[in-house]
Length: 393
Image 1 (cartoon, rainbow, N blue to C red):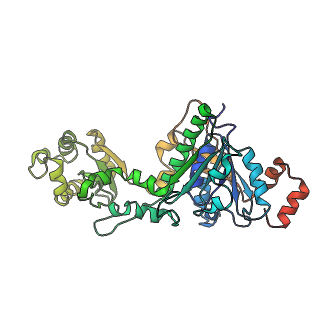
Image 2: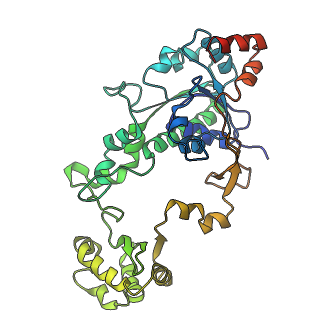
Image 3: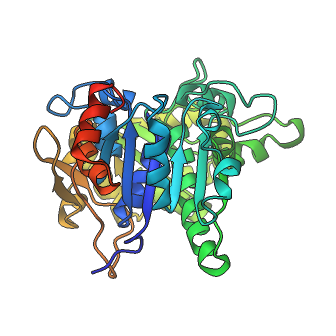
């Protein structure tokens, strides 16, 4: 079946996570993604680790279904190669250092006259203007700058997220903005410029804690894996030492929890705990009561009681538990994807569609498609050999 972005060509000057994550989503939908990489070393995320049969975990995650073209974009011959690539491109994505794309003549303003249908998406830490425009930005720095770190962790110590959420946020806003721009181009016939800021992406995700702290009010307290403003909501230890994650949303559920799960119905009307603000204020005392009731029970038995009471709950899974998750297995969400080190399992994109199957092609080796792409652009074998001898590719 045809895919939504079949026939769309994306040229990307990308590294690390935000832009590669964006363009991988486009490739999932059928777009042809041509990834330009530095000769010899490539996207520096290739060298982050060697955890996937010698390959980088970050790179394998964000770069399937792409074509890798090595090109030294500062080499005098690179401008002609880039110009040829852009003649057939629908989208240009870049997350180079601040100002680097403009110095290469790849700003939207520089390209618009020659490529009026081209969509240019710039991903940066802080956006194309403002006093922070030229600051370098990495995921942890944006987690901190956006206030995320201030509300995450324990009362004693703030913490970052365990994955690159600032990069993911920016990558997803770039992805959805490009889809919107492609739709708009269908009616206007014109391309557009998209300016995605990692800071703005993360601040959007911080909407709840920001409004909670509106007009100088106190922010949500750091509560570890528990909910900052609802209780009981978070991890609780069972008698076998394993944790169970559970969450209550209202007073009806609190009464059922007391009767069925704790088997102490009188707690529901205890004046210390008969409203959520009181339970939050008395969370330490209530936690002790809950975990005392769980001492005779295994984590599985606790979850059985929670299911009987129709109280939301979950296992506190480690990575190996997720690889083997029965729900993902039952829904057949894993599929093999080729890599230079052999096939590895990959999660099919969220959003299972009856209309098409996502593209799940190989993770490319560095420069794997260079010769073929240059031939496609009209370069002769002698020209390709000369570019390679000169260090341009």
